[in-house]
Every structure is written in structure tokens, then in C-alpha cells.
Amino acid sequence: MGRRISLPSFTYTKPSLNASEGFPNAAEDGDKPVNAESGRKEASVNISYSQVEAFVRCPEAHYWAYVRRITPATSIKALTFGSDMHKLLQFRGKKFMLRQAAREISETFNENINALGDDYLYNLKTIWSDYCKQWRNTELPTETEHRFEILLGTYKGEPIYFVGVIDEIYEGELKRLGEHKTFSRDPSMISLHFAIQAALYAKARQLETGELPDIIQWDHIKSAPASYPVWLEKSKRFSVSASKSITEWSYKRACEERSIVPDPVWIDSYRNNNSNFFFRTPIEVNPDHVERVFETFKEKAKHIVSSGMNCHHHHYGRDCSWCKYQPLCYAEYSGADVEDIISRDYKEKETLDTDEKASDD
Ligand code: SF4
Image (cartoon, rainbow, N blue to C red; front, side, top):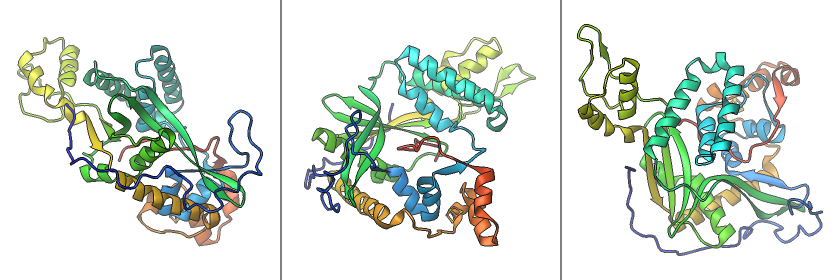
């Protein structure tokens, strides 16, 4: 059962199907050569939600990530629970591709086993298997990982594209976009309504198809597997204390490991906890919110392409403690040779992701 949030129906007050409205020089990109394969103007600039968010968080970090395009040389190859779940979710229902994705994840895991921990792969497999059981016989999306590129306008003759990847598109009577979100703590429902990324993707879809989606469906996946009931060695049975972190599947796994026949009463009881680990929240799309968010996004994108690319404002603060560019800022602060550190400890990003997919919040 998903947790459903009901809102009154929104009225459509200010639809805009012109992405470049308000963007400078929007009609002046005719002089750029067009790539025969992609149909895009050469020498274009991509702006994603992630990039704008990075800039707002800290222009200096944005500079390293999106202008210098460097990343720590020792960073684990994008192998996190959030991104791995996305790889699997992209191919659910497609056996061959799913197997291939699982093989790639296993290979990368074997290369990074020390950093990830021995139980990483087991936990991922367990969560994936429980997710599939929870949503068995539910509708599959019409399309997954839908990439979009929308011309926002031009700056000094260079086309600026708004780019991103929508996790899922459902083309039923009700137009739905699906976004996966892994979580370790229960997500705030208010933040789902405000979610900027979802509003931008709804707008992107409207610009592509002429229709605003009706619903954004958040697919929540807990990033830790369900627990086993406590085994009481003396009485050779499981504890009967209530726990919200045991599901029907973890209970069955625990029984199987001890060669015990699962008790139907406990299966029923723990079934109520399944939705603590996997639940879906449909949020009605609010057209006014979408317009507001898109206008703000365009303003920020304009600022980035016109003056933000070489902006070196340092937003020193809480984020510095987990920022991957901290050694560079510290080198600068202490007068050390920044370029020397870059040459030793950083590498060029192989690809510049159009989007960074859901990680634990
Ligand atoms: S360490 Fe702090 S100031 Fe430096 S780039 Fe990161 S967030 Fe910005």
C-alpha cells in the first residue's frame, strides 16, 4: 500500500510552452553548426538541475565540478546504493538487461570490496528482491531513464540546453512521472510537494509533449534491509517482541536459515511492516509551483552561463566537511600549491552526468 497524499485539484493558470521566454538572445543561435546525429547545435552548454543546485550550494565547488570537471582520483566509481538501485530499476521487467546490470554491479563491487564492505552486495540483492515482491503485479512504466534536452536560449551565440533524466514515465489515462528515492530516515511529505527536481521534470515533460503530467509518483526505497527477529538460544525460538524493522520477508529468511517453518500469524503481523521499507507517494502536480520553479531555474541558469562559470565565491560552512573539493580549498587557504594537489589527487571526470540520481537523504 502506498501512502497517498490528497490535495484539492489544481487549476491550470499560467501554462508556458515557450522554454526560452525571458532567456537572452533566444533567437540568435542560427549561426552555429548542427550535429548531424543529434540535431543539436555544436558548442552547446548543458545545464541540469544538479548543476544549478551545485552552484547554489557553493560556486567554488561548482567551478571544480562543472568548469574544471575534476573529481578525486580515488573516488569509488559511482557505486552507491542509490545509483545501483537505479541501474536495477531501469531494467525491471527486462530480464537480459537486468542480468547484465547485476553483473556490472558485481564486477565493480569486487574491485571496491574494501571500501564498500563485505555485506554491500548481499544487502543490495536482498533489498532488490524485497522491492520486487512488494511491487509484484503492479504496472510497469512505459519508459525508464527518459533523457531530455530542451533549448532554453542562447548566450553569445551558444545554445543553452536544459538537460536531465526522468526515472519513469507512465502513459496511462493519468499522466504520471515516477522518481525513485532511497531513504535512511522517513522523508518529509512537505519536501515532496516542494521538490524542485520533480517540478522541473514535469515542466520538461510539458515542453516535450504539450501536456503537464498529472502526478509525480515518488517511489521510496529504504537503504537498509529489514532486520531478523531476535533468536532466543535458550528456548530455541524467535523473540515475540514487536518490531517495526522486521518484514514478512526478513522473518521468512530468518526462519529458512534456521530450518524453521514460518508461523502464518507472524507472517501476517510482519506484513504490516513491509511498507516501512517500500512505499509510493503520488503527489498531484501543481501548475503554479511548476511555473515558479521553472522561472527561478531559468534565472539561475542565465546567471551561471553569463557570469557564474568563473565565479569563485566560497560558501564556507557545514557542507565543507563532506565536500570532495575541501583539500583544494584548504590548500588555497594555507598557501599550498593547488595545481600540484590537482595533478596528484584529482582526475578529469570521464563523463559529465546530466543528472545525479537519488542517493540517501
Ligand atoms: S570546501 Fe567548502 S568552500 Fe570549498 S568548494 Fe567545498 S563547499 Fe565550497
